[in-house]
Length: 152
Image (cartoon, rainbow, N blue to C red; front, side, top):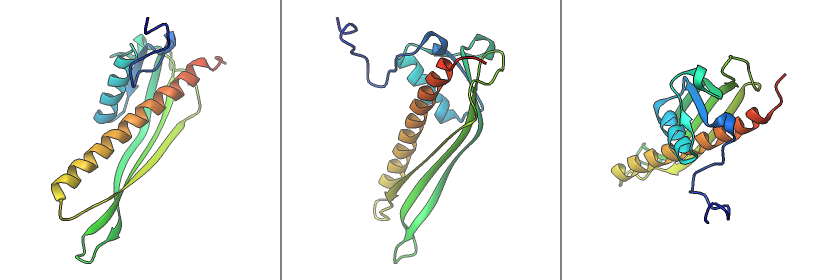
């Protein structure tokens, strides 16, 4: 009954048959973990061979950087920015490009309170994890478009 009303688990995405099997090449471990979790929630799989995949994601460049925005009176950073950059391309199992290269860039700022150093380390890790989750959702959304684009 729940399926009939359009209910689905939070984080799951309705995948077309072409996207049920995805191969990811060159991605960082945190991104692969988030993609695997998102695919599992959406009843899809990250496969171990590009030959078994409906779509291949080839990460050409991925980078996460920390940047100090402001420095307090003690000389320590009081505000930090996390910057994420990724360039990637989609292929089919026969190594034919499905779209032009794609780029994802995002940044998050957070206050770096030097009186709660341990808590700030945990906050930074949570922000990183959320960024990887968001990137995984963006990749899957773009993969849907790539799989629906007519083949040349």
